[in-house]
Amino acid sequence: MVSFFVTFLFILAGSFSTRWLVQHKKISPVRVSSGLTLLAILLGGLLYGEMRHEFSSAFLGGTFVGMTDHNKFSSMGLLFADLIYALLFFFILPFNIGLGGALGLAAVISCLLIHTFFIRVFPMVRRRTFSSLKID
Image 1 (spheres, rainbow, N blue to C red):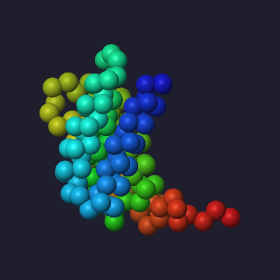
Image 2: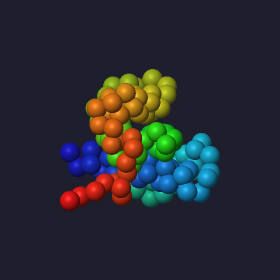
Image 3: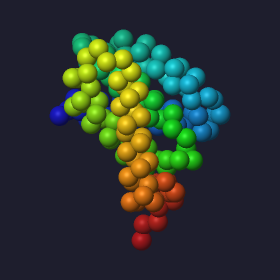
Image 4: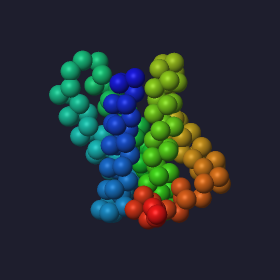
């Protein structure tokens, strides 16, 4: 269970750092994703054991989720997409050994689920961010 939460933190770091750089520094999403992933792999080499491959793969998938247009997903929508991606990454992807593009496929599935379900059920996922939510 601890592994899931640490993996989820790496996914969050990948997606929100990608989102921030694309939105505020106006760098293309592909360049941001590849640059951050290379940096994560280099820093991941400092980690010990087999978990470094899992964490760098989780970070890469998180950057895939973070490449979604910031006009389509708010920060809350991105958080939900990250959660779905983490569940897919942790429970389904280990069984897809040899399936090319599994990380990208899981990222697309998580974003499509958020786009089709949560935006229709909870419109605040699309139109608001955490900073604009009013707490009375």
